[in-house]
Length: 119
Image (cartoon, rainbow, N blue to C red; front, side):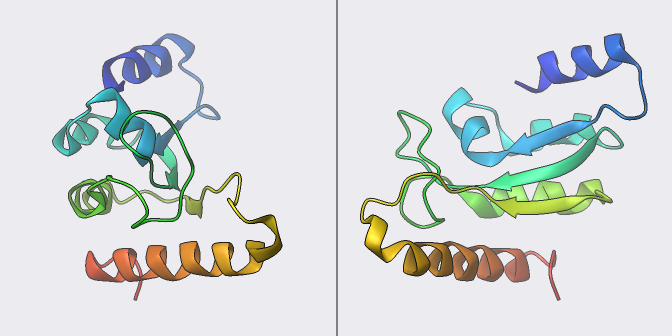
C-alpha cells in the first residue's frame, strides 16, 4: 500500500530507489486513486494490467474490473519522469500471444490518451 511504500522509501533514503505504481495491485489492496498523491516525487514507473478483483492476473485492460481512469488521472498529476509498461503474464491461448499483446497495447494506449498521458 502507499503508506508502506512511502515509509520504505523514507527509510532507504537513496535517490536510485523509487516507487513502482502497479495499478492492479492497488485495486486488489483497496487503495483509492487519490492516495497516489503521496507518491509525488517518489515514483518512477507504472505497471498497467487488469485483474478479476480477487487475484493478480496481469490481464489486458478491459478484461477485468480495474477502474483505470481515476488511477491514471492521479498518475498524470504526479508528473512522473519515468516509464509506463503493460504488464502481461499468461495468455489463456498461448498460440494467440500476438493478439493478446496487441489487445493490451491498444487498450493501454486508449486509456493513456483519454487522460492526457500520451499525445
